[in-house]
Image (cartoon, rainbow, N blue to C red; front, side, top):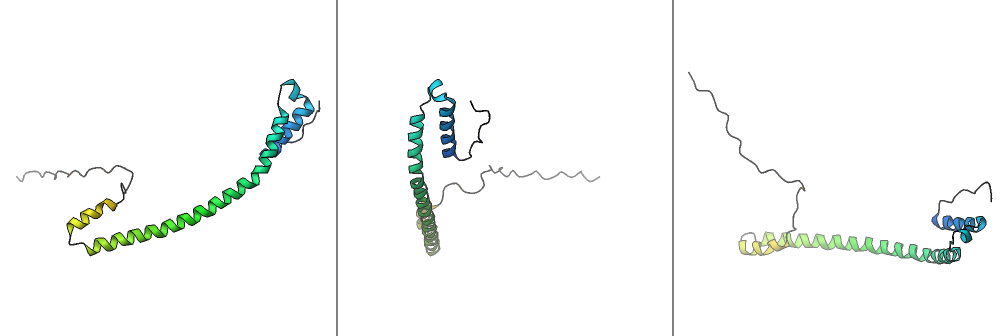
Length: 128
C-alpha cells in the first residue's frame, strides 16, 4: 500500500480514471469486486461521446437563439396586427368582443389585489 495518495483531479473523467487506477493499485477491484474493466470501457465511451455532446449542445443553443429571435419578431407582428384591428373596429363592439379571444390569459401582478372597500366618512361631533 502506498503511504501518500496523489491529489484527486477536479475533472470527472480524470476522477474516474484515478479511481480505477487506485482500485487496481490497492487491490480494491478484487477485494471488493469492483468491475474496473467495465468502468474503463464506459470511460472510454464517455470520452468518445463527450465532443459530440458539446457539438450538439452548441448547435441547440444556436438554434434556440435564432428561434427565440424569430418568435419575438412574430410576436411583435401579432401584437401590431391586433392593435390595428382593434383600432379599425373600435366603434364595432361585436368585432371587438370577437377579438377578445386573442387576449393573454392572466396578466398583472401575481399578488392578489385587495378589493377596494369604501371607507366610511368620519363622523363630526354635533355642533352645540
